[in-house]
Amino acid sequence: QGITIIGVPMDLGADRRGVDMGPSAIRYASVQEKLTLLGFDVKDLGNLQVPTPESYDVGETHLKYLREITSVNEELAETLDKVVLEGCFPLVLGGDHSIAIGTIAGVAKRRKRMGLVWFDAHGDLNTAETSPTGNIHGMPLAVSLGIGHPDLVNLAGFTPKVQPENIVVIGARSLDEGERHLIREKGIRVFTMHDIDRLGMGRVIEESIDIVSKDTDSVHLSLDLDGMDPKDAPGVGTPVPGGISYRESHLAMEMLSDAGVLTSAEFVEVNPILDRKNCTAQAAVALIGSVFGEKIL
Ligand code: ARG
Ligand code: MN
Ligand code: MN
Ligand code: MN
Image 1 (cartoon, rainbow, N blue to C red):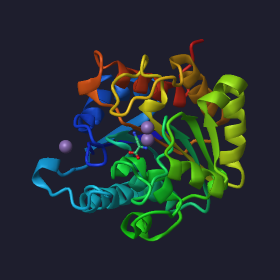
Image 2: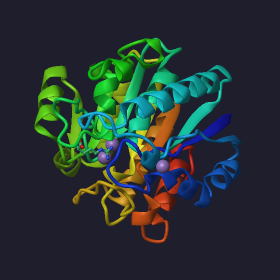
Image 3: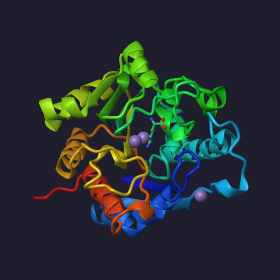
C-alpha cells in the first residue's frame, strides 16, 4: 500500500513558537526510512506553505490568526482529498493541532461516515466563546463536530465532518469548563487518564475500536503528542503531567493496527525547541511504526 506524507509547519494555532519545526524533526527521526523498511511505498509531498506569525496581524484575540489558519487548512483539505482519491494512506505531520481542521475535512470529504480517534491530554473542544486562550489549536474537535466559527466549520464545503457517536478521546486530563459541558451535551466518549488507569489501555482501545468503526467507512487517528506523559514526550507546547506512558501508547497503536481500521493519521504538536535530543519526534516515529504494523517479534 502507498503512504503519502505531508508536512504542515503550522504554529499560528498555538501560543508557543517552535512547533512549526515539528515536520522537520519527525523527518529527521527517519519516518520515511521506517515506513519503507516496513514494506510501504512512501511518497513525501514536503511541506505546505504556512505564513510566519511576525508578518501577519493576530486578528481577533479570541480566534487568533483565523484567516491564515483557514486558508492553510483549505489547502490541506484539498491536498488530502487528492491523496484519498489516489488510494494512498495520508500521513500528516504537524504543526499545531489546528491543522486537524483541514486534515479531517480532507479525509472525510469522500466518506459517508468517519470514525475519529482523538489521542490528547486536551479535549480541543473549545469555541471562541469558551476558549481561555483564543488559540485555535484548542478548537479543532469542536469545529469538526460543526461547532465554532463558520469559516472553520464550513471548510471544504460541508459540515459536520464527524458525528459525536463515532468519536473517542483518549488520554484527557485537562478540560476547560465549556469543553466538559460540550462532552456531556454531545455524549462524546472520553477516556480520561482515570479511565485508562482503571480499565487499562487494552480495554480502552477495544471499546474505542467498537465506537469508531460502528457504521463507519473510514477511521482517522489524530494524535497529539501531549497525550503522552511529558517524561516520555517533553517536546510539546502544552504539557500536562500524568499522561499516557510510552508502552501504553504503543499498545494503543498496535491494537489499532491489528484491528485494521485506520485509513488516515496525523501526528501533531511536536516542538523540537522544547524537546530533549529530539526524543518526542522519535517517539512519534516509533508510534507511527506501530500504527503501520511494526512488531517486536
Ligand atoms: N484547552 C486549552 C486551550 O483551549 C489548551 C489547548 C491545547 N491544545 C493542543 N492542541 N495542544 O487553549
Ligand atoms: Mn512559522
Ligand atoms: Mn493537547
Ligand atoms: Mn490537541
